[in-house]
Every structure is written in structure tokens, then in C-alpha cells.
Amino acid sequence: MNLHEYQGKKILASFGVAVQNGIVANNIDEAVSAAEKLTADTGTSWHVIKAQIHAGGRGKGGGVKLAKSLDEVKSISGQIIGMQLITPQTPPEGKKVNKVLIAEDVYYPGDSEPKEFYVSVLLNRSTGNNMIMYSTEGGMDIEAVAEKTPELIFTEEIDPAHGFQSFQARNVAFNLGLSGVAFKGMVKFITALYDAYVGADASLFEINPVLKTSDEKIIAVDAKVTLDDNALFRHKEYAELRDLSEENPTEVEAREVGLNYVALDGNVGCMVNGAGLAMATMDLIKQSGGSPANFLDVGGTADAARVETAFRLILKDPNVAAILVNIFGGIVRCDRVAQGIVDAYKNMGDAIKVPIIVRLQGTNADIAKKLIDDSGLNVLSAIAFEEAAQKVQEALLLSS
Ligand code: GDP
Ligand code: MN
Image 1 (cartoon, rainbow, N blue to C red):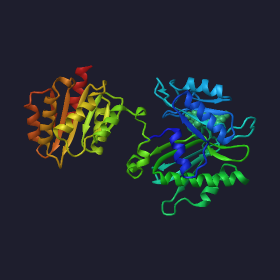
Image 2: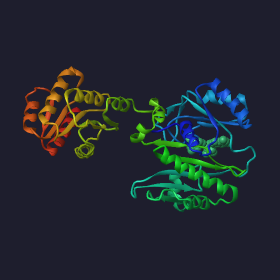
Image 3: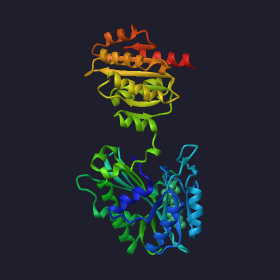
Image 4: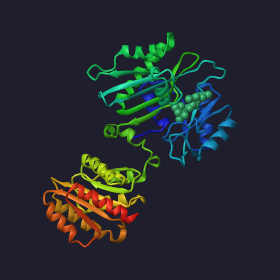
């Protein structure tokens, strides 16, 4: 689950990570009172107004602006709230901004030496270890740094048997070229950050930039936080941070009915049982000249109600030109699934306008094929994988 910057910063702060102070606002009035409160609390009279959307690169797109007075807080938040913000990470049409974070300006006026670092915590999937990745080149595109000056990116891998070691925190501060108060500040920052990563069951923290102010403070200015969905049951208080307006509506609906659905941009809808078979099916679709419109794992019980729900979800995508159902009948018998498909199809009347190719393999596959063939519906059956691929290809040719 992805979070907004303001939500991520709250979680970081709750673990003792130093973050730039800020208050979220839904409209101009709230923005102004947030700025007044920050001035009272911190003494700052300058504020940054930051668009809250699930995408980075906001600065480049005009979604992060400095306000030097309350009048500017008013006018800038008026510009940003409601705008369609386009950044290198949004879809081409951008994303609508519903909230702004009003934050204290931590790049002090006249500060000649703010230093921006890059710090992330993530799982290194090839070693299976958590890893801290960091660089002196913060504030910019880390991909560009990785390409042009990979020697400026450092990593610390955390051995799960030992946990995060204090020498690793000192490595970070040292490699970032810090000394004195800022060195100690970075050690404290990194230690708290790693604690937060583990404690919150996060799968990604990306803090870009981490700022060293001219008075040697180390603080998180930005925060991209992704939490592990599979651990949310342990964090009821985080589950409500989900912003449904940032997510694909069909994925949201699928999650509500307990189906594993991921939207993709192809033309062949797939309904499969088991994640591994779903991946293989997507490869099969590619090989037969199509491209998968989704990943959908219907799980073990493919009864009529579930199959119908899955059909309806898949058909919400207007790009779907054919549907491939690929079910292995191991625990569930193929004839039961076939009956489920026939019942769902009949029940949906004329809602299904695209050809459906059904491949059922496993227990009672023959009976299942016969059931489909005798149903008189626009459903093509197959038992072999290749035969199914062939039929998908034919269906796409006919529909194009
Ligand atoms: P992103 O563009 O979505 O990554 O948003 P960031 O939170 O990283 O902000 C973008 C840039 O805005 C930062 O790299 C800073 O240069 C600038 N910025 C952020 N906070 C402040 C601030 O408090 N004062 C000033 N003057 N600039 C800031
Ligand atoms: Mn950033």
C-alpha cells in the first residue's frame, strides 16, 4: 500500500525519525490556519506548499512551491489544490491534487549550504536482505545518478541474524562525508529510520532528500512510504490510511470480494486459478500475439458466483477483446468449474460480448469440455495449452 508524503512522515516521526514539520490541508482556509500554527510552533514565516499525490517528481511539475507570506500560502495553495499535476511519474493526463502539505521551510533563507542526500530502505530481492541505499547526490533523480555516477551510491545490507548494527549507521554518516554534530545526527536518523522500516512492516522507504541544514540538523524533507499489504493485519491503524482515489477502481473492487486482480494494459482478459498458472497464462497470451489485460487469480473455489464476479471485473476494462479462462482442476473438479462458467454466462445475459476461450485441465477435463461444447454458448473449449493459445489468436484476428 502506497502512502501520501504526509502520512509517511507521521509514521516516521512516530518512530523518532526527524522530519520537516507540516500539517495537511484540504482547502485554502485549512492551508492558512496550518501555516499560522506552524509559525506559532516553529517560528518560521516561510512555508512550502506540497501537492499530495501518489507520485514523485512533484517539484518538477510545479507541485512544490515556497510561500513567503500568508498571502502567498493562500494564492499558491489555491493554485495547487484541484490542479491536475503532471510529473514524470504520473500518467500522461496527470493526477488531481486533493490535499496539500503545508510544511515549515527548512532551507533557511540565505542558507548557502543546505546539503541534500538520498536515503532509501528496501528489500534486496536477490540476497533476501533488507538494505539501506544512500547517496550524496540527493534531491535529484536517483536513476540518473545510478546511470552516470554509480560510485556515488552506497549500500548497507542488514543480516537478519544480527539486525542493524551501529557500525553500519556510522558507515552511512561517514560515506556521506559528515562530521561532528551532523555525523551524530545522521547516525541517529538512520537508526530510527531502520527501526521504523521494520516496526511498520514497510516494503519501501525512499527519503529524497534527507537534508542537512546549515545548523547541522538532519531531517527528512520528503517521504515515499510503501507498506507491506500482507502485514496490514498487524497494523489496524495504518489500514485506514489507504487512499482509494489513488488506486485502480477495479483493483479496489476485486480486493473487496477477495479476488487477486491487477490491471494491465493489454487486450486479453485472463481468469486463472493459482498465481503461478496465471503468470504462465500471461506468457501464453503474449506468445499467441495478444497481450494480457489483467492478472486475475480466482483461487481455489471457482463456483458460478465467483466466476461471474470475475467475468464482470474483467469486462469493466474496455480494452478486453477476448477472455482466456485457464483452470487446473486439482482440488476443484473441472466439470464443476465448467458448470460454473456456463451458469455465469447464462446469468449475465448479453453482458458478455467478447469470445471466451476456456481451457480446463485436470480431474474430469473431458466431461468439462463436453459440457462447454454442448452449452451452445459463444465459448471455445480446449484441453491443451497450445490449443487454447491458438484459439485466443483466432479470436483476436476475428475481433480486429
Ligand atoms: P518531489 O519533487 O515529489 O520529490 O518532492 P520533494 O519533497 O522532494 O520536494 C522537491 C524539492 O522541493 C526538494 O528537492 C527541495 O529542493 C524543494 N523543497 C522541499 N522542501 C523545501 C523547503 O522547505 N524549502 C525550500 N526552499 N525548498 C524545499
Ligand atoms: Mn523527493
